[in-house]
Length: 260
Ligand SMILES: Nc1ncnc2c1ncn2[C@@H]1O[C@H](COP(=O)(O)OP(=O)(O)OP(=O)(O)O)[C@@H](O)[C@H]1O
Image 1 (cartoon, rainbow, N blue to C red):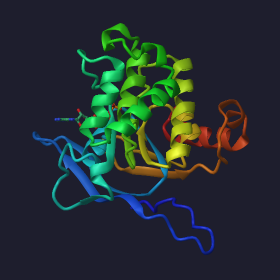
Image 2 (image 1 turned 90 degrees about the horizontal axis):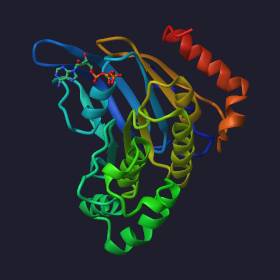
Image 3 (image 1 turned 135 degrees about the vertical axis):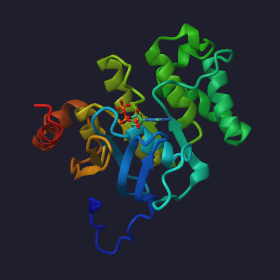
Image 4 (image 1 turned 180 degrees about the vertical axis):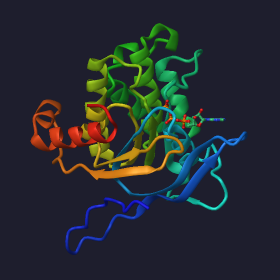
């Protein structure tokens, strides 16, 4: 069992309530494929947690279980503090091809019950944050892959979900766009203080973004390491990457994952 790396709260401060609590979560697919084995994980509200692990170790399965898109094996438990306020962005975007970018963002918010006036007030700033303001009237097929992914992120974040599950949302992007979106994501997170669970294959991305990095072992996936990233915020990409704490954490994770 992994001891959560949650920092002790400052004296007098109440500890943050848990947004996600997994206890003994396992998953066996029909045919006997065991994808997860006894995962214990507590994520306090407002924490940014990155999940790293070898391909096929069950990261997406874990996210799907948290999102209630898939059932875990009987015996374990999954608790999400505000299941109705959960936003999910997967590797492939869910944009509707017949709607414009603006239409997709608006529909996303409308389906989640965001009041009309709030939607109208949020669409413009969200498009601007994501660098999509001049593509508001374009349809998904007229966008680059990076733009589509940004729009998909906007479609979820415009609803201001309390908990955000991100499954490799930037995996298919070029390094520059990815860096830029990382910065935007952090900025949005710092404003809204959502709970974030991000699956990534990038060690630098995990260290730059997260308060905690969870490393999963190979299949069946279990938690092999729960590493707290004590790098002050706000984090500037160039300054953060030059910090010894950044290098140290990244090296530790590379070693652990056998990428040297
Ligand atoms: N619906 C399914 N039915 C059967 N097996 C599945 C199903 N979904 C996933 N698996 C298997 O479960 C294991 C974990 O898959 P999962 O997609 O969670 O891994 P992952 O860590 O997210 O991988 P990657 O990093 O490559 O995206 C894999 O071996 C996969 O083949």
